[in-house]
Image (tube, rainbow, N blue to C red; front, top):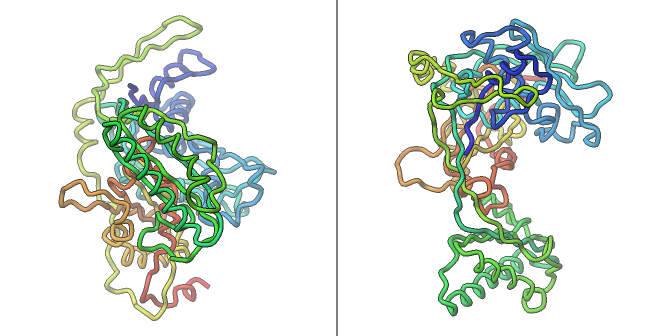
Length: 464
């Protein structure tokens, strides 16, 4: 069980003379904000500065993801073998530029940094951190003149007081899992792979029944290469190479050990073209399922050790009035709806023609950010890419929670002409709890690039 600490304990260590700080669990951005608070003397009451420092930390926390890594236009990013990591140069007023070391691979541009801004943030007006509640909706990203692809200036983060609670992550045992991955070649490879997987599961279930054992808790069969993850949007094209992804969950370890032993017989008794089991016999692993909750900061003590000796015990207390402000609704970032005034036309565009995307996870929820490639495209994205459209597109991956509430929420980031979609219950449990081949939604943004926007005017002529 771990609470997500913020920047204050890191700042205190540096104030006390530490050269290197080794933390327990903390939010990623705190390792940047803490040194900034120490260096510039920022206090806890200047929330705009704390939000700016947290944004700097957010943009660099995933390394090369802001310097061209996993960028939509990946084909334009040079020298993956020598990727440059991001460097932020911060000023005392909270302004900063982001670049990368010279003579390194990668790319720094509006697009690469904007994609990282929307990565896994949920509501951009209320990005909750232990030190500050951030509003990133009006953030702007400007390529530095004369340094195209080398540096960008980032500004516009705003802050509100944080809540009085820490986020806490606990884990508990939830049975066991095993995954078999098997390549299949030849004509009708996907059909052969699917029948093979279904036959293995049927065989193991018969063994369970004969031994008086309970059934699998859950089974997930995907044929990679057949576009199973795309559901109704799959191309339907036949493939001569496919990969079986067969993941199972059971309360008993010995049940999955039986499953693991029953994969090999498929190599001699089922479909032709089964080339082997990737990694050998599947390994049975315990499932440690996460559980998140809030705990009062005032009840958490952080011990600070310097040179092996306890020098201070730190407790963070947020005033009740500030906590209530953090929980209140922030000012709307919605821009005026001018969609009714937009002209239509005979043109259709794939989303990739008009926007960048990036996706990630938060537990069992997926996050898809969409950023217009040109400001003139943004009103059309707002009109045609609604929350209901995205929910329908990913309906086959969303599990109903039994309520009548929409599973997808859309947020706006007019500062970068962006939209952010939060898809609840869309990852099959998320992380290690998910049996899917994409348990963190990393490909969801890529999948959305194929969405077709219809009835638009000639948008490309507007920017040429």
